[in-house]
Image (cartoon, rainbow, N blue to C red; front, side, top):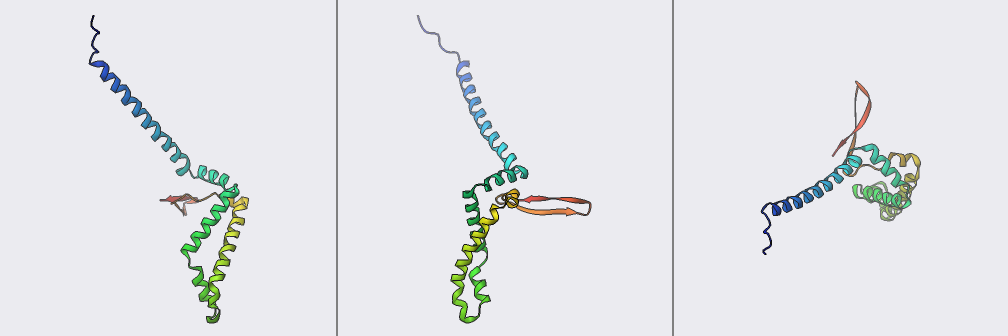
Length: 147
């Protein structure tokens, strides 16, 4: 007795089921990212709360202080500014003064980030510039996000 041949509808159903599983997995992946984007990047209150909690950790504060100091020294030539302020004979002291000042700036940044008032502000969103927007008709101005 011969085994019955599978009907052509069964392979189609099998591929349809596999396709639906792949589609569901892809939609779940995209949904998770959409939820994260909504909660973290598009909702500044959630971002501020999350980053405030992070700033309570000493390791995060130290890294943030080092990052802020590095950014300052990359954007401003501190050594040249010190050299310009010194008399010609004392300009050789600009480099050691800039190094000493860098240590002090990082120390002050750490101290500043320990303050509860600063921690309540949170960290700025990466790649986002906050701009105050207000006019005479709306006295309660809120920061706008420009990416």
